Amino acid sequence: MMPTVETLYRFPVKGFSPERLDHVVLEPGRPVAGDRIYAVENGPSGFDPTAPAFQPKMKFLCLMKNARLARLSTTLDPETHEWRIESAVGGMTAGLAAPEGRAAAEAWLSDFMDDELRGPLRVLSAPGHSFSDVGKPFISLINLASVAALSLIIGRTVDPLRFRANVNLTGWPPFAELDLVGREAQLGEARVTIVKRTRRCVATNVDPATAERDMAIPATLQQEFDHMDCGVYAEVTVGGRVAPGDQLKLL
Image (cartoon, rainbow, N blue to C red):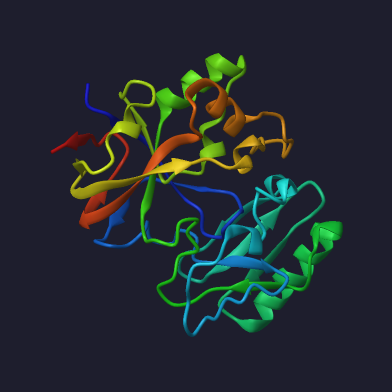
């Protein structure tokens, strides 16, 4: 059975909640449009918007260090860049395209983060830059059968959103994706090359609904499979539209 796209997501602000998409239009050598186009610096990171370059995720607010971020539900308007935050303790709306909007978001998040602040918060962006964990303009894919296999091992349902992938796929055997590095594939109307396994960090231990660190996913992967990989990264080589129900066909 050829794998099929189940769901599509982007994560407009690094470390914050996902937005489900009804389709994407992929471009060669680019990530999903609007994915991780903002990040929130937690103390000076060294990021230069005039010469944007990869910085480790620990320099920003991220689930790996800041599980409380999962308590926030956020959306970003792709046209106006108005960012809405909602939570049980209140929320805010601010336009991240303007300095005053960024300042408002930074002030609200500073109160919310409390003792997890390492320095001033600063909303960052740069034209064309994506704050990827690997520093490359890839898209990320997760095999839902791999997630289901982890659920059986752990004895509880593992939410695929813990893995923060752009493309969730059904129809592969568990962990079959890990053996496909270097393979080309047709994904909907686009074409991709699978370039890298995704090594998992402790961000996956955070429940995206409760913000509790209630699992040990990297440790479980290491114990059961002698690695901490789940999912893969792919590079878009030919652009095109992708939607749920589209197939991934190995070439």
